[in-house]
Image (cartoon, rainbow over all chains, first blue to last red):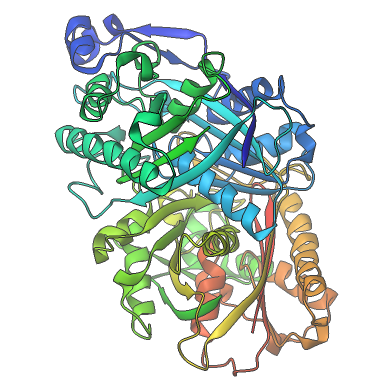
Length: 313
Length: 313
């Protein structure tokens, strides 16, 4: 399956680290040295997870080779829903009046984009869909707690959108060659490392060190696993797009597999942790950098836990 | 694909209609005559969406022909999550220590069971999974408002679990012959007919009449669509398991397609609207009634909107 078009949306409000100092007592230097984050975005009052998904889809459409109304599958990913009944996928269907589509909202936390890709792969395999739109959108600011020293300063808002089909429409379009995902709830503090309980203080990360250790291990392993499934070698990879949770996790993965800085796509310094949108935003921001032959691997780790990777060429 | 085992879980607390009279002013007679609901269940303090999913899975395991640890895909459905990061699917993976599984949490509101079936169908088609566990669980009591005259009295708590594989293990196991789903967010009050906004009063149904009209129309249409995809006639259907939102919707669908009362599986009088768990609980409660040749159709309508049907034999 091919990526026919991609886009992202970032809200305009820029929040610096200094914003948190009077709230959770952490300084810019402390936050930056431990996370790599300098700023993050936040929605304005009339925006939410669903409106950001619509704007990301509008931006993906700018270069789309077909009308969005011809999409027959819409999958959304978010762990910060505005509405638990009306998913971003529903909001997109309604906004663009896409009359004949299967519509699903999912969450595997920061892994949702890769599980969405596998769901699309499945609908393509059964012949139930031919063209899919994936929207990934997080309004972390709706659920995070600015006074929380463990994680209040980590989160950013943002969204991404990808149009995918069985067919290639333009010669430069990239092929998704392999996708792999894995649930890891049975590992470490899987079910309480990171939580987002709407009725109990929202997002919290009571076991940050456990998350860090397992993210390093399983984001590295996911890259190795996807290479094993392909006819490629690690040395064939041109770019890694890792989930953007912490620059130290990203640097650990890069060092472990001997990638250099130019090969690692990051936006965490500007955007913080934008959840399941982070890798799509990373790909969308860097499309001009990738050549026709670039081999790109996305690798993710999500709360709950879960992991996954995709090989794109 | 085959249903290898099924189970459900209902919390013990029984809430009568009289509970609501001092809260939203509605009497037992008013509620019963307009919805068909007499009682509904509610969790105790140490229960939630995830714990109910685990108990439903335990009950499904009683008659399972294989170990739960051999499952390689876990899909959960809920629009009333206890945790937006740790889905019921993650909770089940951790509880049973299922080490090698893909894990996904989804929501298409009351349609989630049928979208879960389609996701399983897709993973089976790509060869990425062989045995799946679907858990559907709703703690509506965590998000509903007892003082709401529009919908406070409708909701119940409960969960269901289904083990599905490509293979038949026991001669009496039922085959899922066809599944169809459709997003309907572009229809009527799709994106605001029913909502569950965690940060804005939880579950509300500001356009109940619109939901009623479209549920009648699309639950009927979903049955006709699934029959059209099969080699069956409407008259071949032995049982309908409709989503349990309102007995008047169910009666409307039955009358429209000329089914008699004995053919319609209901539990709404005892359980209220248990969301995406309602049809799985209905199937699980009535397995002894179905013979080896019974043809069963599940039909659902969900907020957002969405619809779907499954033909099981």
